[in-house]
Amino acid sequence: MLTTLSFGNYRSLKDIWIPLAPITVITGPNGSGKSNIFRALALLKSAADGRFSEMIAGEGGMPGVLFAGPDDNRFARGFTEGGPRSSKITLRLGLAFEDFRFELNAGLPSQMPGDTGLFTREPDIKSELLFVGKRRPSTMLLERKNAFAYQGTGSARVAIPDVLEPSQSMLSGLIDGLRFPELVSLRQRILSMRLYQEFRCDAQAPVRAIQIGYRAPVLADDGGNLACAIATILEQGDAEAFNGAIESAFPGGKISVDRDERGAFHLSLHQHGLLRGLSVAELSDGTLRFLCLLSALFSTRASTLMAFNEPEASLHPDLIRPLARQLSLASRSTQILVMTHSQSLANALEDFSESAPLVLERSFGATRIVGQGILDTPTF
Image 1 (cartoon, rainbow, N blue to C red):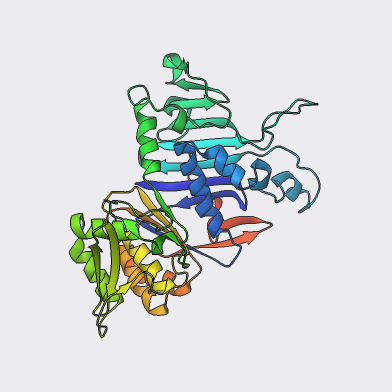
Image 2 (cartoon, rainbow, N blue to C red):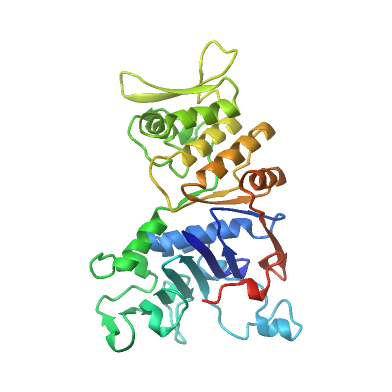
């Protein structure tokens, strides 16, 4: 189980520690940093699948993702904006499971005067740590400093011959399960995380296109394999519970997937009072998004964590409580993280899970959790 997420100097996340429960709900006003938490988690996952540098580039490069607010020294002297920093900052991405803890620190590439290199906005990973318990030399399993990594502690500490590229994480660079079993285990857990931010539902969206049938144990990020994912749930998953969730959201409703002679799947939603099922081309954006959310929660392949950013978008108010109920039920088998603007959804999730939401606020450009003090943060 994940116990903590830790982010530093990523956009508005100057220094934040997020305690995780089976279901964690994060809310707050616009601009407080909810989406930044989701994006930081996606960035951490990209370090495991080898797309770290690509994802940083997609956000404008390292200068564009680093915290733009005042540093502590300037703040102490009364400066809150403008002027140079008194020290360099690095991006920190970290997480803690009950057994392993991991931290990655990246900054701007080191440049000599007159350097005309082409990759000046690419991340330069300065250090990575994989350890157990509290961070100290005796608990280190793997440590990376710039291009080189080390394994073990004390007299048993040895240099690893593999040379890592400046923007390549240990998570994607050291993937030999025999040599680095703990790191590979951590990588697999991170890669199993599923992050859902939005589902395109316009007329040309993949979710409305004809899909050739195949088994889909996981709903795609964009929901494009919805018909295949639902067919897999109905054949191999908890079809009874899935149909019950459909009926609770759409009284008298039922979902079906048919295959034509070309092998294409056709999804239909049957509702009380209608003589035929409605195809995906006929469903409203909100109904289609709800089916995507439900399919993600009922996926047949296990996940370490599922994160949803504003899942309430475009949903009819009558669907908020059915969604909250299914999120709460799903948290019995996988951890759930929800970032939401909707007070109705936050309240419903609290009713079902008895877990109060974490509320964000922003001060001098930095996101913080309301009521969280220095003694509330982990000591590792």
